[in-house]
Amino acid sequence: GQNIDQPTEMTATEGAIVQINCTYQTSGFNGLFWYQQHAGEAPTFLSYNVLDGLEEKGRFSSFLSRSKGYSYLLLKELQMKDSASYLCAVRDINQGGKLIFGQGTELSVKP
Amino acid sequence: EPEVTQTPSHQVTQMGQEVILRCVPISNHLYFYWYRQILGQKVEFLVSFYNNEISEKSEIFDDQFSVERPDGSNFTLKIRSTKLEDSAMYFCASILDRDNQPQHFGDGTRLSIL
Image (cartoon, rainbow over all chains, first blue to last red; front, side):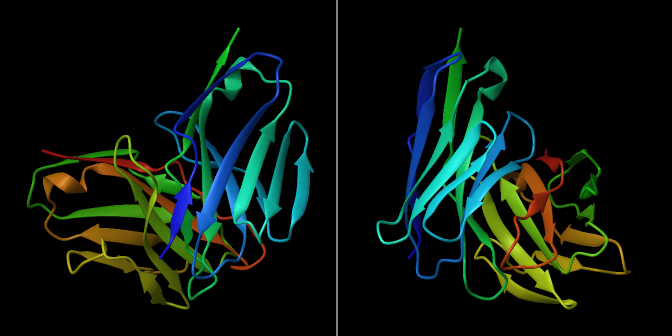
């Protein structure tokens, strides 16, 4: 089966750093993706990992450990506009390469 | 930067009616997807499409659903006889290389079934 877990919600302060964790169990793995989704809008791509290690893109970084089935998204220098839902998604290795999404973590950034 | 475009942005339909949601994927992309997101719930995979045929579909994608690529640009999702529980945001996504790139999502169609 396939299961992706991430915290339901988190709160952080403007200017701070926040880490959003994601654990997964899948029958076939071909990459882990992080998307940002503001209410009523489409998911927008942030970062992805296929191999173990850290990928850095500006204020956003994502880490993957395939042996542990674990990833995190790190957001630095938080801004109010970072308040959104952050979606962890695993790409299935089979067939069409569908994405399997977690429930999302609702991040609230406070002044 | 090229985008996936979806129309309409909002569709209101009576239960039992047919609805067609339209997507124009990024022009050189080869793999196409439909996902849906019921309000307050997670994004769910519906169907993937490659080389003019369905490559995978989920349990949600029953006989009431169909997809088509009628020409070189459009990718459509049809729901034959809508139900109240079909009310959701529907997202189209496309990708050039299935294994090495992220999927790019359109802005979505909000489908409301009355």
